[in-house]
Length: 225
Figure 1 (spheres, helix red, strand yellow):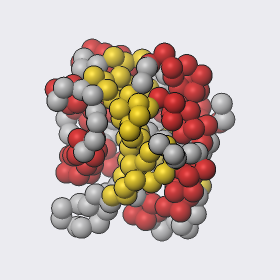
Figure 2: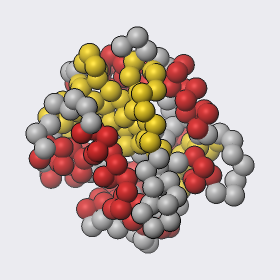
Figure 3: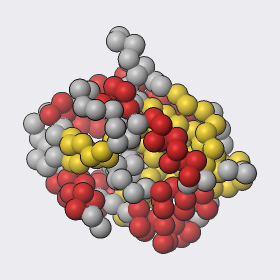
Figure 4: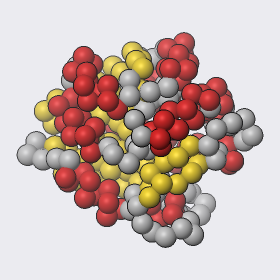
């Protein structure tokens, strides 16, 4: 585990309660107005009888999908977030990090849809992306929603690199900043291709008032699948 990986995990351990409240009280405008609906709409466009939510957090997506008839499994590296998800129900939840998914993902079974909703924060995710191909049923899809590279770049150079999220926009309850790895659009597409995925659709969900993209949403399928 790299130093950045350890700091990401420490941040989610420390901020688990604050994050759970922020999500359940709908304090995050971009989620409330745009990105939650965007990922749900993308999932609904294809098979979703069985869904794996990777980086499920406190479990909101599994709960909504369960209400729509999907069987959901949620995994997250943060034990406090998984505990919050288990208490709220809506699916099967397990503490599992990237390495666990690579080494023991077969214990979770096969899925129609794999979802990474603002969950791919590390630099070295190619091994995970490669392993996830084995978790899909024929015709299944991987959906990745992440920050939009152009809007998230801000005034920094438009190049791959580590950034720091201080959660200032989410209220004063967050105690530990979180490093995350920024990727350009070109880098995202190259990474997916190198990991054995082909792009099926690219979406840029936009804010209803500003018209600017709030996220980048990539739908991919295994090469040759």
